[in-house]
Length: 325
Ligand SMILES: Nc1nc2c(ncn2[C@@H]2O[C@H](COP(=O)(O)OP(=O)(O)OP(=O)(O)O)[C@@H](O)[C@H]2O)c(=O)[nH]1
Ligand SMILES: [Mg+2]
Image (spheres, rainbow, N blue to C red):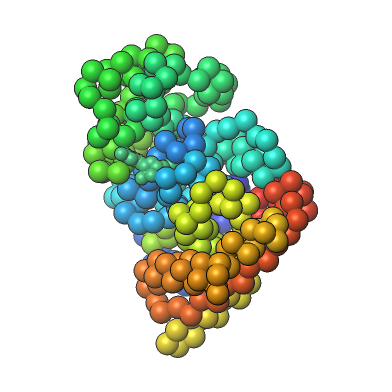
């Protein structure tokens, strides 16, 4: 990802919102800003942590692994720092092209980051006898960047288990500090943020302070619809589904949004539509409620279900859907 250049944005009023032209905020000389990559296995709570820090649903969260597919930026502002969090897809061994693109997103985040925050899942560490993935440790070590670890889901383990997990991560020698947290219950997050700030480079903010992300509203709308599909279906459908917003018109009373839900097979298309359209109606109702909450506006949502045979393994479709380079 291209980092925006501070001096360019100060000089080019076309690039940034009008209020920045005449009201360029002053920042202390020791203001810090930089990128923090959230890295870890699927389902450990990376997106939950980002949302907890942001106080908003920037990244979708479900109970299933491999929910996040692409790098999602969350911009956190305080008086002393702007932290740019890069939420990433969980680290896996890719089996199809879409997963390969997902791993590229995680690698790109590591390459772009000033600091790497590894999120580990405490109950899972306990279950697997505190074994730390050696490939991950090698990846972090090779990056040469400062690394911190967050031991997440502390609400689900006893103190003795936390201690074992801490010892296991400490023994790798790659982490500057280890923070037990619960992203779900918002525990342990302030000390983690404080520590991140101390490790950030002294740099003016990259983005105007009221920006929460660099993604357009369309992106969040399609992600919310995808989240509802992840929640509704078990194994196959969520991983075969992509959502594309094809029309988005802001109107006076109610915005009009049309989106295509794309699956891989005709049989999946039938399932997503459901008997007499009941399934798609349910997805639409739930998605619309969350989209309205996110946009703060009323929305008319129109959904169509289509199939594109084997799109997850087709490089042209993957590119068209915005994954990979
Ligand atoms: N008990 C508990 N559950 C948590 C905590 N943090 C996250 N979870 C749950 O863990 C599940 C996965 O959370 P996500 O935030 O989607 O995980 P992720 O690491 O972003 O997953 P991928 O995007 O698939 O890589 C969800 O059901 C969360 O509610 C926590 O601190 N405690
Ligand atoms: Mg995620």
